[in-house]
Structure formats: C-alpha cells, structure tokens
Length: 292
Image (cartoon, rainbow, N blue to C red; front, side, top):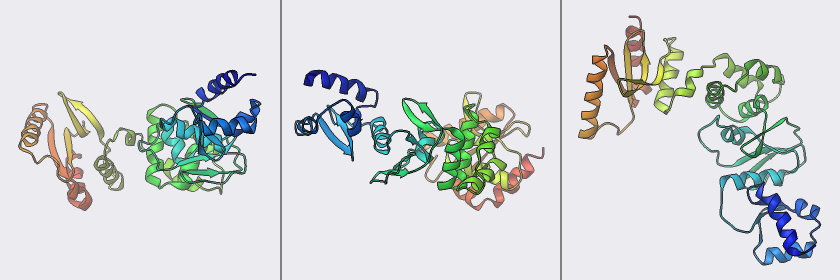
C-alpha cells in the first residue's frame, strides 16, 4: 500500500482521537519502524507522550491532551478523579494535571497521573472515555476535600444525572473515598450548584452550620440578580469581596438596586468578605431576619 494510502488511514484514526495516535495503532496499520521514524524526521509525526504522537500539526488543544493521556494509558483507559469530574461538568476548574484510570499496568509521567490495574465501567462524553458517575465520585472523594465532593454532587443533581441510590450501591466499603463520599451524601445540598462565587459558598456554609434556613442563590428580582434570597422572610443579601463596589459608578448602581428591591417589599442587606469570615454577626442577624 502507498504512503499516501497509509496517511489517509492514519488520518481517519487520529481524526477520531483529536489528532493523536499511539505507536501500537501505527503498528496495527502495518507501518514499519522505518516509516514511523521517517515521518517523525519529516515532522509529520511528533512525540507528545511515550508511545503517543501528534499527527500533522502542533496546534495544542485540551481535547488532544486528554486523548493523548488515554492513548498512553492504553486500551480500556478512562478519564477519572478530578479530570473526569471536570470533563463531564461536575467541577468548574480544570485540574492542573490529567488523571486517568486503566486496567493495565502503566506508570505515571509528568502531567499525567495514571491509576493502574483498575477495571472501571466507562461512558463516552464528548468523544472521550470517562469512568461512570458512581466510580467517578468515589475516586474524587479519595483525592479531593469534602467541599469539592459536595460541589460535584450538587452539580450532578442540578444536571439531572445524580442517582444517589446507584452511587450508594456502588460504594466499596473500606475502599479509598467511600467514607468521604458517604459524608458528602449525608449533607448533600443541591443549592450548592447554584452558587457562583466563594462568598456565596461561605454564606451557604454559615447557614448550614448555624442551622439557618437556606436561601435561593442568584435569583432575578425586578431585573436585578440577587446573590441570596429568602422569599418567605422577604430578605435579599448581597455579598462584596475585597475591593468590590468602591467606584462611584458601582456605588450608584448598588443604591439603585437596593431601592428597587425595597420597592418589591424586600429588605436588602449587604455583607463583606470580612464579615463572612468573622461570621458571628452575620449568623445572628440572619437568624433574627429569617424568623419573620
């Protein structure tokens, strides 16, 4: 077969893998070592990980990096832990490294953490293999703090993909992450998924720990987005980080917003980050306000 035909077949395979291909796949196409070496010298193939090559160009992409990690980990590999949770939308922030699980024995390399000899149920999400949600959550619980696991649970619930019975049934007693995942399920709050900032999550934590009614987050009222709203108590809370809301224009906007909220028979209260950290006054005031 001609080199042109070989490149066509190679392009078809790598095209399904975001421009990446493994050496094992090249050999399965019948390519000789001399051909692979020649294409590497010509720049048509370039090494991205041991035994994994980019094809045709060096334009980077997140998808290509993830595909390369899966190819490196071998057949049966899947994105897992924080990487898998981020890829399926359960975490907002992309992890610094890539985490994959594989049934094979494969060591980690810089930038790719491999969890070997792990046979995991897989799904395909946006063209890449990921561990199933129950296993993904338990792996996340084995490596991330409780707040991150709770956030992932809330986001899964918000997206309609969370089946707590299935998650609990899949828990492997005594295995890493099981206890932390059970703890996260015990205090699961779907409203976490609606928080958009660290300050909103701080406020939610205060409400939980002080046993206060939980608010709705980021609700639209009369054209304004309110950080936290207690409808029954007619209370609207706004949260200010360090350095926010100090310009004249922003102060004027805040005043207009507060007047419009009062016109809707709401009581606006504004808390700073410093007040949330100190928290006692915030808890006391919210307790009194939400008893109405």
